[in-house]
Image (cartoon, rainbow, N blue to C red; front, side, top):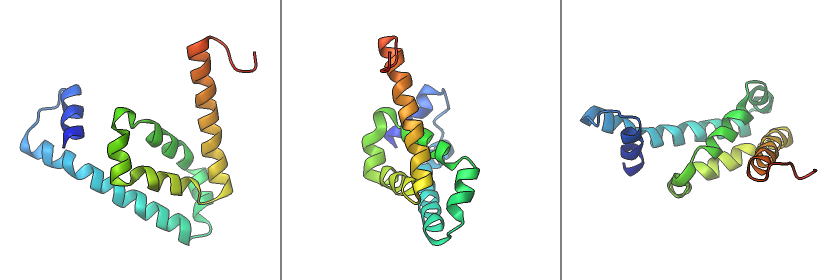
Length: 119
């Protein structure tokens, strides 16, 4: 509720009862979706290839990196653990997510220091 309330305030969304109820259900919907995705990836041998082709690693990377100051809530509700498990369903998925993490770290290093580590 705290997360939903502050997000709504920052977006100037009116905090009506219906909006608050909808925002309160989002974490549950996300967890159910992540759980279903993980189960599919674990049970269907071809699912990881489809996940890769559909840009799944990009979505996982963005979700892992959009938590900001709310990462503790994400850790408590289990979404961080599910995302980590999703990245490990195959070597190819793990490599794609790792590549995005390395690129982001390099970009951050350049932004903070004005050059890459290799310079």
